[in-house]
Length: 382
Image (cartoon, rainbow, N blue to C red; front, side, top):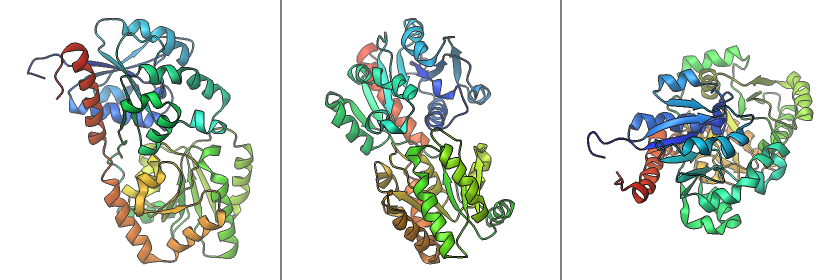
């Protein structure tokens, strides 16, 4: 763009920020901040009601609008298109998997994963119904389909082959607050959690896809056979279908399980930095941001060998069969008993995590926006 030229205006579907950010909400918030910092495009966050993090967005200089509607789906499909028809909007980006069926401006969508389709049991019916009816039309009309990983790209190609030539992998970034902790801070956090010698950590929404039952099986067996086994700390909100999981976790508190629930961001960083081993046996991930954050903190990491996790972690962590509690137990014991391996994995993880930055991700999304707009309004790509 030349000096004085008006910035392209991108409307962003920010429904994932109506509630406190988690998962896609964290992605959306971080990407919006990075795009705004770059200053090449003007982003306006739009949703069906006010956002939970409105003050944070305001401090970052991000514009927001709310067009009231009875539900998020109603808003996206019926209310939002009327707003987009105004002449000030150049393009719509949805980081929430779908676009309006009738979209008056060019559309870009980010597909984080296809779990509503390939792993339907991982979502409530109402969630599947809010996405699946609009997925095919979204992938037909989207000018570009950004995906979080090559694994997700392969899933999209398999189910929607006509979208193959519009796919582009844009890896999410890791917030710069995730760095190794100072020794005195690590010691303080461990003392606060009554885990002075360290602990295993799992972070994420507690739902079937995260495969916590296998982790609990592995850890319980480890504790019962090894008196000095590390305690287990779990952070993250309850999702759904977890009544049995909740009951089991309460019973395991006597063996050293600590459930901390959803934590404020700063506290989550502290708890991550003080972990001895991070364990993430998820059955399916579009990217697996908690594992990447753990690597950035220098924490040796264990992940399942499914979907995108091998792609993200590579040889910087141990990979296990997520259905095999014995395999997971052995991986935990292997790191816990070998200081050299623990240190090596921590260093490899930090190196690998440097690949994933929000500035890089935002630059790639920006290029997508400008390339599409160049074909529609004569704007020259940067």
